[in-house]
Image (tube, rainbow, N blue to C red; front, side):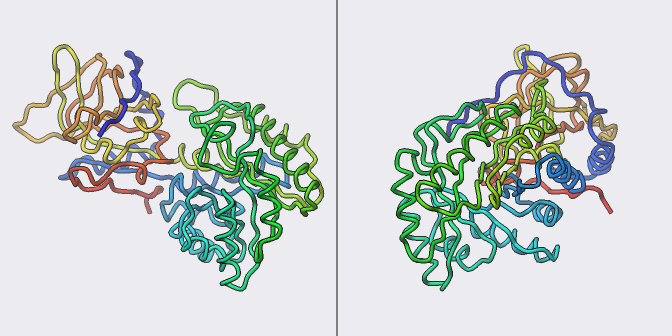
Length: 416
């Protein structure tokens, strides 16, 4: 196993604890006094709904919002968003079932858009049987396999062709467009793929899907990208006589992890309102991280504090087996220190004070690191480190099987 360590903070200070919501501080303080060290994700579902409402209000009426379930498939979160977002972006049978169940509980129709470069026949058959599903086909072979699934189900399935564009001008943490990639159909092969989709039985070509980058913070660049996606879709559909109905611009709206300027949602909405899509054409966005990251926190109680050759280490209850995001995304993910007064009588209580600290987990590998060289005012064994912006790509993105420690708990806020 080889995992790149997260970048060093070079002595930058920890997040002030008063930036944590009171509900997070209160719930963690209560649990930290219990017999077992805290290791938990906390999710504020009401805050997620508020973000979805804010996003929808900022966008033109011709834009649909699909929550990317892969970002965080926690059941209560998905259920809370059903009825607020237009639908869900899914990539597996379990995500289809989760979205369908959440929409049923909310008494709203199930609308999904499905992506992924390796859709199995089981997923294609589930999608073919589901009203309200658009399948974003990623290859010529997938078009053939989807056609077979549609014919077997006796259905006509709306299909959008996922395009790997020749270029994209957006910056982001991951790039999937304009480069060699397993995602989508290269733009130079798009005409042949459109012709194939039009002649295969059981398929109804309705548009195009493009998802170029993740983690973009530039609203102007993102609006220009949506305009680019629309232009490509209008041109190619007209050339092939396709009745264009949907242009899916994917996700990619980022959240800042440091002192970066956040994505300017109002600016983005204003720029989109300058665009006039053809009548009857809907544009889909698939935010995942933007909706989920700021409404989740990962908390891990410090089980030991060590000084080793001039460096300080805080060992926490759960490391990359619970929270692998900082290493997987190569980001500087800062934390706050929540003081906990309770401590067993008779035990020494080691402490780091006014010093850079590296937070490590409980695994038997030096790669189990969550944050490096963050200066803390005081950090003791028994205190809790809390990572904000942990609501996306957290619990399910970790490596829980290594050493077999118990998984992190998941807590829905507010507590009833």
